[in-house]
Image (cartoon, rainbow, N blue to C red):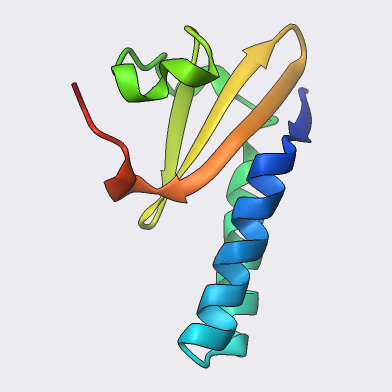
Length: 100
């Protein structure tokens, strides 16, 4: 079992996403359901984070050379594994990641 840590940037990403769904789209119930499921996806990484391959696209190298990515709907969860710790770097729209 791995320990999951969230970077401050990923916490900010999650808060911004929740606010956008709640206030911009006037859908607080949808926001709660979406965020609950997204956080469950993040927690599920604790069981087998190596299931997702290391990514080699240049747009992700700012987070490290052993960066991994898992998607939840249209969001990308960007993380690295170090010993028994998973560090979530970002939670961003998949469309913002360029595949080079």
